[in-house]
Image 1 (spheres, rainbow, N blue to C red):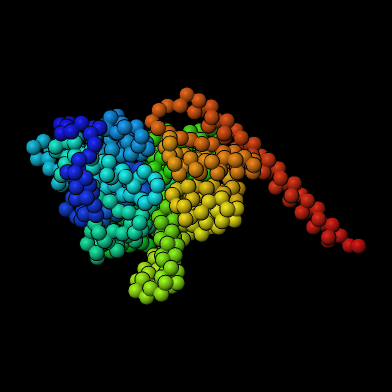
Image 2: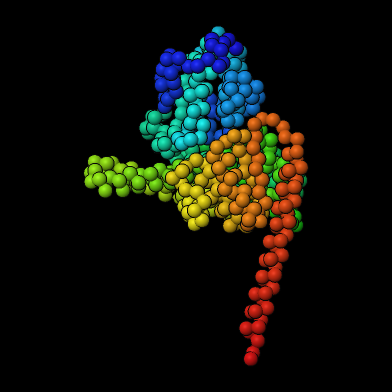
Length: 475
């Protein structure tokens, strides 16, 4: 790679100008859209949704460029920033080597969304811009983003008539991917032959990608649901019906680390090998939260406008509130239909309701959605897992992640008091010497919790049966 600047120089006025002109919401129709591979199933179906709209979306290979990501960062950035930076640098370098003199940076666009609030994720695309500008051949690669601030509005990156279709299709694709993930996690610990679930799901996922891509700008959702139901029904047949139920572990935490197997050192598989059944928080949960939270903010704006008698703001906010409500109802409808198809054949874990999560937080004044960040979902989601009878909670996050540290400070003493096994799992790319021991100890505690819970249930059933017989006995 040919450098222009050293990696640690402070940005000058020219660099700051490029942050405004080369990081933005650009149309991607004529570009090769480079998508970071965060969560394997959802990202593959997201890329297929882009391709259905005519966008040449490519899911980049991940984790092979971590050394480059660390080389061009200071170490103060959170781990996903280093991973994604390394991914795009390696991919562009390989494209340059493949095409030679024909390589043109302007033919590509790097997709790096952002979120508001104190999380450093909102600054990834800015830092990535500064680093890409250090390479002469990569300076013309624009960075495209969508933002949680406007619920990931897509009309800014593609034609309006396609944007509306893409928004609905991509949401459905992510829900479907969540269900496929949860199907794997439900079946794999109990499969009749090791490896059968993973082998089948790779073929099934390719089939789902094809169906989504072939749907184009007129999606056939019924075809997608039918294929989803067939996949779940087939996968369910791989289970050993005589295998005893394992302790269920709920995973919460930072969205990238908990869904990216390479960076979390395949913690779900590791927990399964220790004897657990695992459920990770879904990607759709975050999208639902963004829509829900936007509605909360719009209601606050409406109330202030009402008190201030600001009629223009009232009119505009009322229109936005209606659109947000319609989107919220649409998401619930689509998600409900997909899960209902799957639940006909397999008792996968249903997704958490964002309203229920907020009520869990408000009930004990543990946290507040007004604070925001993923901590709100992690704390509330962990409590929902406990309410649903899970036997342990794992909090997965990048080392030094502020929202996840807040989450840990709330959950650790709370779950200890409730006698629910809890484990913090921070990652920064280094191997932890005692990691396997920690996981095995945690799962052992979860098994003890399951046995204790089963014993209490049996005692209660016996007591209820005795009382029932006593009531039926003639006086």
